[in-house]
Amino acid sequence: MSTAVKTREAGLTGNLQTVPLSDLLQLVTTSAKTGMLSICRNEQKREIYFRKGAVIYASSSGNEDQLLGNLILSRKKISKADLERALSIQKLTGKKLGMVLLEMTKLTKEELSSFLRIQVEEIVYNLFGWNSGEFVFYDGKPPPAGQVTVDLNTMNVIMEGSRRIDEWIKIREILPPEETRLEIVTDPRTKSGSVELTVDDLRLFPLIDGDKTISELLQASTAGEFHTRKTLANFISLGLVRAGQSKRTVRPKVSVQKDLSRVIISLYSESYRTVERMASRKLGEGARKILKRCFDTQKSLHPILGKLESSQNFLDFSYLEASSDRITEPVRFHQLLDALNGLLAEFLKAIWTSLGSSLTRQVISQIKRETAQVVAQERCVAKEYGLEEELMKTLKRGQRCL
Image (cartoon, rainbow, N blue to C red):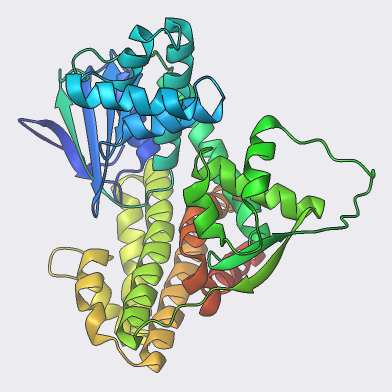
């Protein structure tokens, strides 16, 4: 467990950049903690509530009632009129939407619990795609008054969240960029001649009209981001849907540079932290000394790496991010990318020398998993500048050492 987790009056506090969500959840469940874990990134906020280490509730930026209503509506358990009436009652009474629907006898308590379970799972699973975000754990803080709760095994949640990251690797290889319109193939040709679609597939399929982009389909779907992306990828694989034209928006040059800087930092910080975390489990403080020697060697070859080193720490990505506005020329971005790839290759070589081929393979595999979500979320920038290809080349170089 990373030492970056600190304690204060509120409880545990830190950042997902240094403490991965899986490690954080494992700490909460093994400590059998009761309370609320709050995670914030930009204007987004997620809250997860625990009872003796088990997940019992989760909210998403205060719009959980809207998410729940859309989920129940998509399952045909209520009508649009029912939902509008329930929302009106909710505004007048201040009660949670689930309780209102129970009192309206539109749902049984068992049905509500089942829908809440799906909603809570989706909120937590989507957090596995966050590579940064400030977190605080508030000991003993209960869910909102009157809230119906569930009981999820946190270790199972961790396993499923990690599995989904593996699936992201396959999904991102199939889906085109976010601004791509998707259109239905009028005369699909499949190997078997027939295709089996689930109920969720049939709900999403009519939304594909040749004009909506992947980004717009994600907003229109009630199935959640992960399942929507997975279903769209499946449609493309089956030959039912194909990529159309792109809706491209012209962004100012400065915006592109900031996006590029942010994606590079996110991609390589995730890779370096994976190396450091897995090496530290075997070598303790010795891992940091080995990596620091690699860094000093590479810095002499690539002076631009000096922007990655602050007075407190080497590999200080917050310092690099603060300095990134001064890296404005395209050639300097390429210099930075070459330097970061060279440093990562040197790290992998050092891991192989110190810990052998087996652990090095594990490190490379984990890097692929943990950067998959970054690439999926930032596909446009990553593809335009070939960031994923650059990273994969470096990892292949590392594999050739084995």
